[in-house]
Length: 515
Image 1 (spheres, helix red, strand yellow):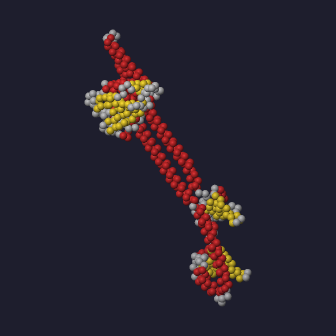
Image 2 (cartoon, rainbow, N blue to C red):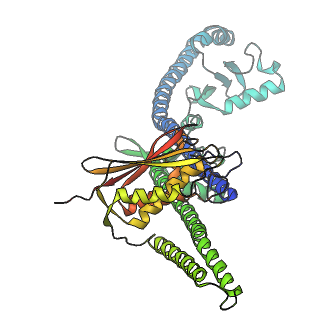
């Protein structure tokens, strides 16, 4: 086989159209890879988000248990502390210097036992003693700066107040830091949540894109409407104690779980895209193959018809230019014979092209005789000068009949032999046509001594439009394959090929069996 020249086009179509097809195929492959990559990344993101979101509810539950336990412990401790202060007050009130005794107790004994923020005031709410607050406790209230006094007042506002009475009169107030409230607990949650009362009126909310430092009554109407809309899309969990309904907690269901369900739709969409891309590629490939086939057939038809038509025109010009009676009868008969030969060739070519694409009736033909005709025809027309080419027939199938269409099979053999001649045009050599048989099949091997074919091209050379010649439409081997396999139900292939040494084609046909 003749190898492609450096600047040759390996297709019967134009280089621009070939390059466009290759570029489109590359874009389709890259597009599918990008879609697969994006799909895989998105799936991983959804899985990670779902895993994290699934941990929210257990974490809230654990935090709420810890909050409840801590709240009860703090409440119990505050009650003990208040009882201790009350008891100590009544114990020290019997002392001669009550003020000094209570001060020593608050500054020396109390902080070690109760590391909890506490402020004790007189009946006019003037702070007398304080502990574990952000104001120095070893300075009297009168000696505090205005800033410290203000800070002490602010701490008192955030504390729970209890009365210390003597009889019916309040003689002191005790301010103790509140246990962590449910509202404070909600603020520490990194999840969308709303807490309501039993009437479903929102009390606290978190991570719902609405201001959290205002009460429900202070929240603007639009924000309230938005909060209600968000609650309608949340999961509702009732808060109840025994038979008493305390309220409700609303939280957002994990979004990633719902999105994972959409992966099925994405998979279907991806499958449809792959099918669409594949179908489009097949349509494009079929269209390109069809265009190449038709263009090649048109060129081949033009070539096959051009020679006899040109010859006929030449004979007509000779007859037209010869005066009546000036041509001898012998010359006139020769002209008629040549014109008849050209007309027969036109009829033969028309008949051969007419069989392409139509139903063909096969008949028993002696294959040996047909091969002799084909090799003899080419031997008479082989070059015998600088690049001498000889063709040889080695047949062991004399008398064997095969079901053939004679014209189409001779056309396939012509294309194979022409391919061999093209492969040897620069160096010459021999073409061997060998015919053998077994019980069921006949084998025809056509071997040249040309430049050979790379193994990666053994199947591609039978595709329409594939050619290694600088000029050509890549139709010969494709047409031979169609004739052998579709019309004669045989098989054609590259049996072997070595670069620089030559190529062997094999045709396998079934025998015509007789009862």
